[in-house]
Image (cartoon, rainbow, N blue to C red; front, side, top):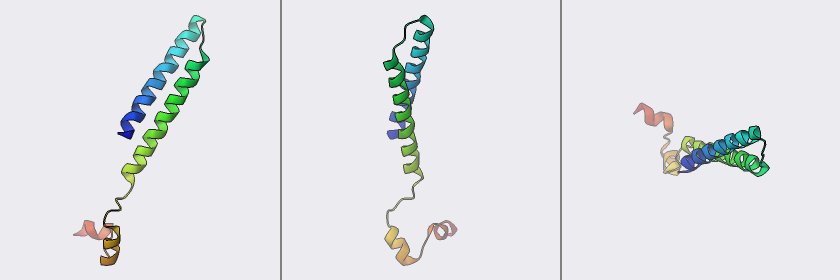
Length: 79
């Protein structure tokens, strides 16, 4: 869910930056559009990064039981 929200914010931020560039070439500029687009893109990238870290994290479920039994992730793969 967080990754999807991050992707959406990045997309909206990039669209805002493109709109800013089009307006800049037309002669009218809105600095708020530039700042908002950059902020949304940065926030989206942070959300995507956070979601990627959660996916890579090893599940902590039954961690204490695995320690007691002496089974690690390599022992589970061999069985």
